[in-house]
Length: 261
Image (cartoon, rainbow, N blue to C red; front, side, top):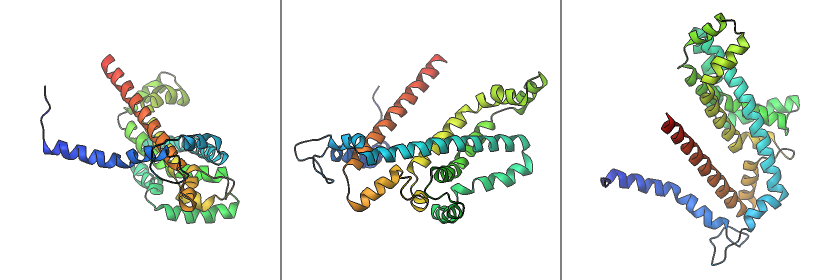
């Protein structure tokens, strides 16, 4: 069966190609043999990929970003999940008042966060520390966890938890056996958002970190400011490939589940 030709389909493919154009340019730049951004002129080199592993500066920044992102995501899941479940149980006026307040970090401009946290952390000695940056990123990621977990809780019948409690389950067991299994998709989505928000965040990091904590986005920014290193293109290519692999894996996993059902 042949697909019907339509102008809207052509326009959609043109837009997709336009959006993918920077990615297609990044790949050849990442294998240039030169020390500056340029397209290969015949020879290709993987020296910039090797520098991501051999250069201690890149390794240190990747490690710092992973530590901060994983810890911030864990804290955001704990705070956001607990809050979402709490207001779901209480409902009413509590939810309508508290939830907009908890969503404020995703509404307030990042520069406002930066100034506020800089002043606050300077007063209590958390500037240029892992704890300080983890707390900031957890605050920025918590609203997304609240939204995704709250969306998952909408589909839960509160009577299922009440039934578990009436059969003798404690509050902790009913949480583990009844609530958490039904909201794991919301937790996974919220954790994904929180992780990538922390991984990509740069504005607040430039205000409250200096030398001890040097995350990957800040390393890239400094590389663009001082001397554009082709290793940035290599890093971007690796991240894009990892994203595509994860998406294909999740898509294949979803297709296998649907076929089994």
